[in-house]
Image (cartoon, rainbow, N blue to C red; front, side, top):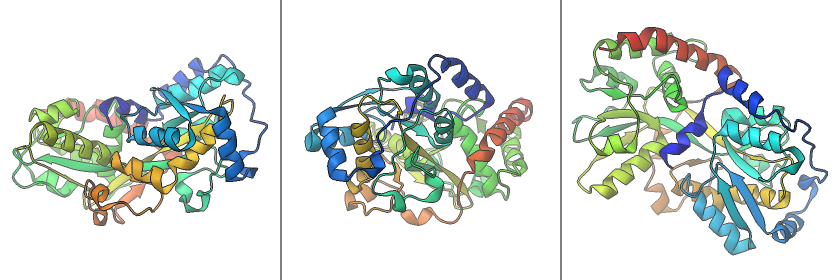
Amino acid sequence: MNIRKAKKLAAVSLASVAILGLTACGNSGAQASETDYNAMSLEDLTAAAKEEGKVNSVGMPDTWANWVETWTDLKDIYGIEHTDLDMSSSEEIAMFKEEGKNGTKDIGDVGQQWGPVAEDEGVTLKYKTSYWDEIPDWAKDDDGDWIVGYYGTISIITNNDLVSNPPASFADLLEGDYKVTIGDVSSAAQAQHAVLATAYAMGGDMDNLQPAYDFWSTLAGQGRLDVGETSVARIENGEIAVCLLWDYNALGYRDNAVNNNPNASFTVCIPSDGSVQSGYATIINNNAPNPAAACLAREYILSDEGQINLAKGYATPIRDVELPEEVQAMRIDASQYGDNVNAIDYEKWTDACQEIITYWQENIIPAIH
């Protein structure tokens, strides 16, 4: 996974929704596909997809979540060519709506919170796939308008050359003497989710964010809060001692840094006292020019092979698939993902996110020493 994709986790803020409304005002009469792809056999769907021969995605570039292997597999197995245009979740939905019946894109990958937005905007084609019963209820809507394919969990990455005793929890972070990097909470969804993770770890939740505010106010007052960019470049350059990142970003950054400097050493862990997880969902354009190929792509993404491809990109597959040993070895031990990892109620997220941004700007930024 790469840093440019962090934009795709943009929070569903009031400003974001407003932008979506402005950019999506062209063709507002998107019509549902007349074909019920859920009623087709997999054999018939595959035949139709092969006949279409291509799939055009948005927000699913080769370098993100190892999509490249999935697109390669679709080409090698089914002869389906692929193109992608990378963009944010809100931009994907806006494009689907603006193009209307003249749709040019087939499938997109959006932050979990944007799945219901896409459904409400009427731009999604319903397709459940043959793996429907294996998808957790929190990771899909009722009709297959959106389905989470993979997810991430807020983690801690530590530069072992700068910190001799890597923290394993938020409580450990409070006891340290190093700076903790969280990024720009006012605009970066990764940082906003890190604040929410702090709330759960410190005894709060989405309805009680004060424990998180107290935590970060303490670090700010101690001069230990770094709100600079959470980039792989800063990590490699030794500018960051400890950082809160999605696990897939932390693992990717770690391996990239070690590949460039074999003497580098990093520890990545899920904080033992609490964290949060959030997924990415595929949405299929209701006016896709290649709808069967888009449905087959979602089918393959949720297959064992597709899920393993995503795991190679450090994401956590939504299905409980057995990963090859060499893939599992790249990842955080599964035992760290326990009961303290919380799924997010995205019906509450917009309000919680706005509260986090406001409190951060008004109280924590001024307290930084």
